[in-house]
Amino acid sequence: MSESNVEQDRFQFRLWHAFYLVTLLAVVFSIGTSLFIFAAVWIALCAVAAVYPKKSERVLVFLITGGFAAMMVVCFGTSMNLEDRVDDSRRRNCLFNMRQLMLSMLNYETEFGHLPAGQFGVAEGTPPHSWRVAILPYIDQQSLYDQYDFDQPWDSPANRKLIGQMPDAFRCPCLDCADGLTSYKLVAGPGTLFDGQAASLSRVTDGPGSTIAIVEDHLDPVEWTRPSDLKIDEAVELMERSSPQQLPHFRESTFRKTYQPGNFAALDGNAYFGPVGEYPSQLRKYFQIADGAVVKLRSSGGGEMAVYRFGPLLALGLFVILMLYPFGWVIRGDSPLAGIGEDSGQE
Image (cartoon, rainbow, N blue to C red; front, side):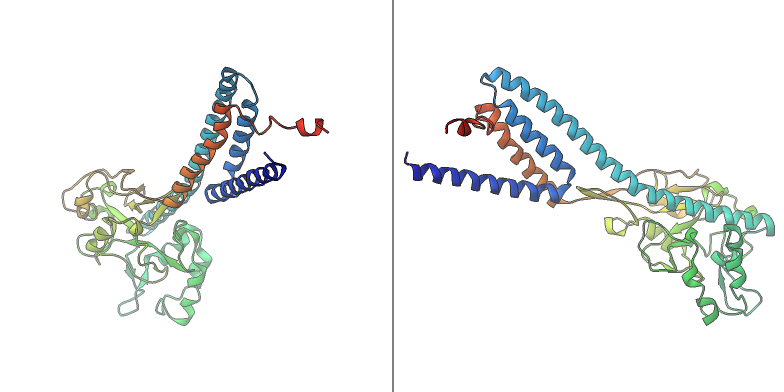
């Protein structure tokens, strides 16, 4: 082979490896930079293993390499689960908010003998106000409560100034709502405890633990001071959403986004992950206070819908293929480290 051909082969070799490295870096950054460490160590160990003259020695070193790779994969998978758990903590904070709101209503009931109505006024003919305003003193917001003018409508200029001061208890951490908007609503109207009569727990013949009071309406958040809630039909439709984008909570990782149903709170002060029990098609009975359906509410843990991200999945497949190239060194025994130092010794 002529000297010019040798130089040409060396140039092609370097060009191929440059292309390989650029492709590898692009794939790694599209999935997660943590894979860069795995790729670097994998390539280095494959190169070292391929130096050994005997195939048995190369395989032994490669087995050690494989064990290290397996450990890295486990660590990578664990990091993905930790990312899911961080996202899921927002849903648990939302659950805590709903529990706090329901307990605040029960504290209100202890003092006044009944829960605050969904919409209430100071006197006959006055504009209605929201239950969220009524429970402000019970969520450590007495000063905000004192600023609210019950003699004026909720959307009067004076009261609208308070919308931007919405307490965190009314904000679901999972939702990106505008300031002052809340997704927490009572289920009110005929058949519920909040039907215009005194909201006394003595009227709940089905039992407070079997009756849902607060749900999440992330599709139509409202100003927290607005006296706006849901009827039973609206609540049932909301909790029977069937497409991922209609569910309020989600866990997000590199390869998929898992959507989860909204939380709900019962009249006994407990809050749960949706959907309700094992009977999503019979939701109506869980909102009524005297229909004879006494079924203890609980978190079902179901109803999740996953949407996979095919871009990162394809990138992961390409990454596996790229990692087969260094593996070929071990099989063939042609390590890129084999010629290091030889050229310098042939001066």
